[in-house]
Image (tube, rainbow, N blue to C red; front, side, top):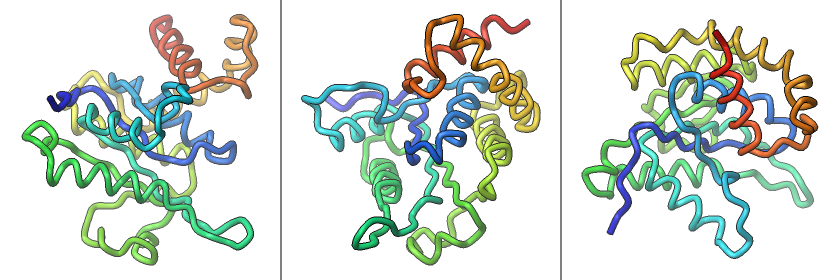
Length: 205
């Protein structure tokens, strides 16, 4: 029996490498601050589970999806592009198009670095409302926060600029927060980071 989608679960589809981590942490913080539950392939470390199957299961359970397709540059030898993010976006859109009534309620935010850049490598989504974050984590927070607030219609959720300011304060305290818990900032897992953010937001006046 198909799993129901959660109206508070948000699938995050983005790179997980160190260069992108400021954006990834910014999106996770924004989702939690906006009252949502961030989900991604890093949430469970189970070598016995197929990665694609895990991603499909998470997509099935999430009403919302945030997809950053800005990292498609070629690298390696021979140089080849990275298409994991467009693939996962396609899975999400396919679930919305061909899935049950629950799946058809899915909503997606698609982010890229520059306006219309995506048309060079994934032109089939031309005409969709793609948002640009300009390779700026603060702008990324504004785009994500505005979209989530629109979806939730919750007047208590602050605007993107306020959340971006709160994220800067949290980042300035992260080393001390980690030290108090016996952690190193560079070794934080997805679960660690989410738990630290939730505790921080709960403790805030």
